[in-house]
Image (cartoon, rainbow, N blue to C red):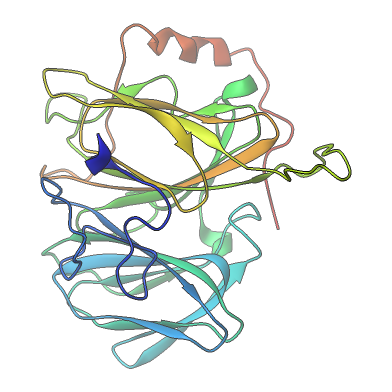
Length: 301
């Protein structure tokens, strides 16, 4: 299902290494209507710009610090060394606003977006304000930064968070879905943007001729008659779109930590993340009750 999987560089557009779902993007995906993502790498002193559009946005530093100019006002985003070094400042811009993003020292930045109509004010969410959650237990432990969820941010359509999964652990598990508007479930498209790294302290043999190749794995499968079947490797810069169906697990291979940025939105009236577990695997949640959270968490600065 190539239309749902974009290895690094295959969704590029101009200054953006990833440009999916935006109104002005030449890489707009057929059948994709409610979410979008842009990712850019900036040299020191460089700037990328976003035209005003009927979409809400969150600017998220992935590596480095940034200045975002919106409506003539400058907002300083204290960034981080990498996505594996704790939370970061983010900026919600609201709708219909042009923005420019620059970095004195250079870095990598993501912009989550969703077509929207209701106006909410621009808001700077500081790293220390970001709700941090340790979800699951044992080898299903993961760290979640909920800066763009309904409990943390007033917005019109989207739900945005990021997840860090330590080497060898599974996240987005048990498999679940959110592709119907019904009691207990909301219909939400979802974007996964991945980054991976060699886990700190990994005993890589000195002089290894091939070096390392940080990778993880991801699975998406059909929950009804609509076909979708994704099972493959992911690395830094890869994007997987989930239009419907069961998704999970996202697996961090032994020796390699995994990060992903999630952007969700849908056509429903209610802005909530309500899911249905795969009935064959939902029981796994009960095993976490008496298990400890992975002691490697949380990852911090």
